[in-house]
Amino acid sequence: MQRALQRVESNKGAPGVDGMTVTELRSWLTVHWKETRAALDEGKYRPSPVCRVVIPKPDGGERRLKLKVNRRKSLVKHAARATVLGFGFLRRNGGVHIRIDPKALVRMRQRIQRLTGRSWRIAMPERIVLLNRFISGWCAYFALADTPSLFEEADQWLRRRLRQIRWKEWKRYSARKRNLEALGIPMHVAREWAASSKGCWRLAASPPLGTRPSQRILGRP
Image (tube, rainbow, N blue to C red; front, top):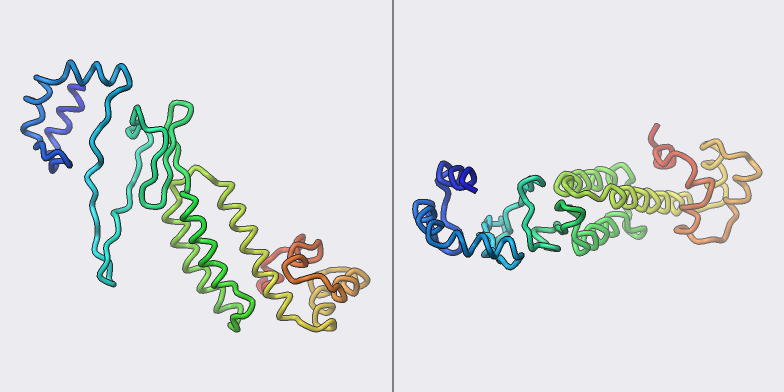
């Protein structure tokens, strides 16, 4: 605690929400340390809220400053769960784990649904450029999250939506059969699936489409 106090004093940071300055901290601890230590040992200590910083947005609103987390220095004794700026934090197995807040996942899916809408007439290369722009930023922002399975599930879901678009673009039996054969599907299988009356979403996960590299289905090498 003494080393922590010395570090705080050397940083000469701004006061928190309680208004206490760095120069006032040592004298305050001299008087209140025993009761503070007892509260920590008993699990009753409740720190004041973190001082919030907001950044002006171009449209006139404000957004909270992104929080960078050092897992080894962010163990708050009483905090079981918390949510900050699209991240969820929970304490488990003696450490703080970072997850993506469910609301952020919903917003991500809604945005991708708009960008991959089947009724939106746009060339696939242009659609992919817009998707890459959004996905690159989103993944970079949430890279701290300890949930790789969520990224994998989102990737599979997105690829299926793109295959669905491509299947709808092919439209006719002849085009579907020809394109399936071009993907290396045997002729009799290509005929069977090209004539299928199943919906685009279901067929997007079918063996002829789902087991082939999505890059080829999307027209990429």
